[in-house]
Length: 282
Image (cartoon, rainbow, N blue to C red; front, top):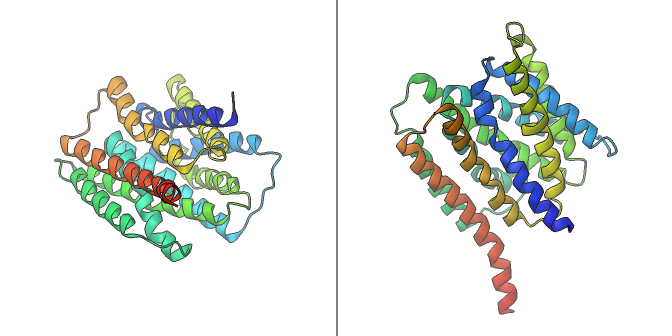
């Protein structure tokens, strides 16, 4: 199997592993910070072992990215507990619009009219998530899911800024930081067989192995394929929760999710198709 085909397989596996987060987080009866912290501790061990032969370099950019990553995983786990799994993952999936906005400021990357159009469509899609009748806790969950998209964009941008300077350090430090801030929440958790199995699957497979596979795959496939294939995650995440726990997203959330996924996927497709068209006409 060639590196390219192996990378595509790894991306599919990555997206499937990521998609297990919603059902496992909801299945466990621990408080969300305990889940986030112990999941990250296990994942840090996996990532540290996988990249043990590579340089570990810590800079200010790494620390900012690690803080963004830590906030992302904490907000996402709390949001998944408070609102539906579909809302949590699809609202986090709006991260690319914040990358476009912050990238023009921090990376000097120009925000095009196509970017602004995508941002407008995604924002319109986000409105639908707040049209369903939701209780206060679910509303807070939706807002935290939006916040996780913002903080994830900070992590993405910091990793772009250090692409040639051990970017995996950001994820490793972010997981360790998540564990440290979770320590006050670990006192009253129950170590049942179900909870232990859940946290091991979350740490080893859903987060740790998934990021190891993604780190390999992203080096061998175009950005378009990476984006399109990983859209499996926000699609499968609520499917697992429905099949195993019976949770259904609201009607408006489904509409909003379709708008968000379609807008972001189309944006990346048009961006990658443009150079091909220009080359053909040259």
